[in-house]
Image 1 (tube, rainbow, N blue to C red):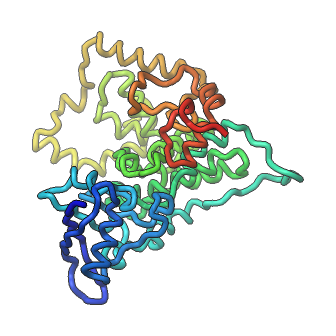
Image 2: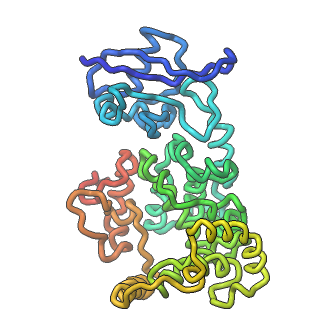
Image 3: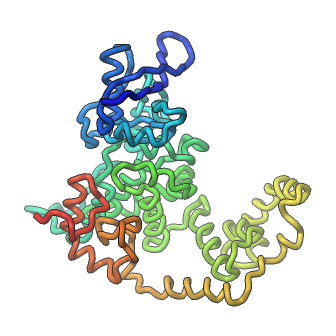
Length: 395
């Protein structure tokens, strides 16, 4: 047994009082979970402490909270592990962010999380005609969507999404990862319609700012941001969808400016995102309107010395040898056969870049998926998405 002090964020809407911190000292073995510590505090000191929980095995996702400022499942976080990130030796526990608090550590997931999941039509729209017995689906296709299917809807990614903090209307990482589960499923009949809907929505796939917070927050390795990037890639490259938000054009302009100059030429990024990938883009009507609306911001940047006139008019200069290295990277990536597109999906490749001893991805991701697919599926069922196929239990 050891003593641990828990500092709980308390809030009771019926009292009319502001939220406050409440401390309790509990006695448990260090390997026991933070959830068990909260439940002990409720049983011994204050029966009014509000916490949502069910399975206590990191499967249901009910007990999502913030522990020492980081989203986590309370039942999946050991007390000794939580102590490593504690300030002043006290474990701080508060409700998840980006969702209204109902009471103490309980948030209203229906108001945000489930509302956004419903937004992406989270069910299969079957193709016609419906087969008499069953759909025959390629094995690799189902292994591909397994990463999205591993989501337990705990809301940890929603809690830490910076885009949702800025734009609460953003569909969000959990819902968009769910969307990929059906876009990646060959049995669905409306891939194009789904992608067009999410691309044209100003709060859709192009509203993500690549902060990686959802990837860090997810306890199941779903990597929601990666699924959002895949939705973008399939939307633009495979279906040719040019969105009204200029998201596709912005990505093309960004990529090509770095390829041509080695560094991003910020002054050219805006006009090319609106007027097309050319130096003449700034003379296009859409780009001209956007440049005019941005003049106050540009003026302030010039006055404060953040931007110089020559810096805006001329591209950044990179040494030739460095620029050639950048171009070689582009040549390697763009020279790949599109049919052999490589996705760092742990369920396909069985490769985790953080795994000890891993030196690089397999040479053929498709072959790795075919050979290690069953292992990846087994890893999903056991809650270990990063487990390599060689070490996964066979069926």
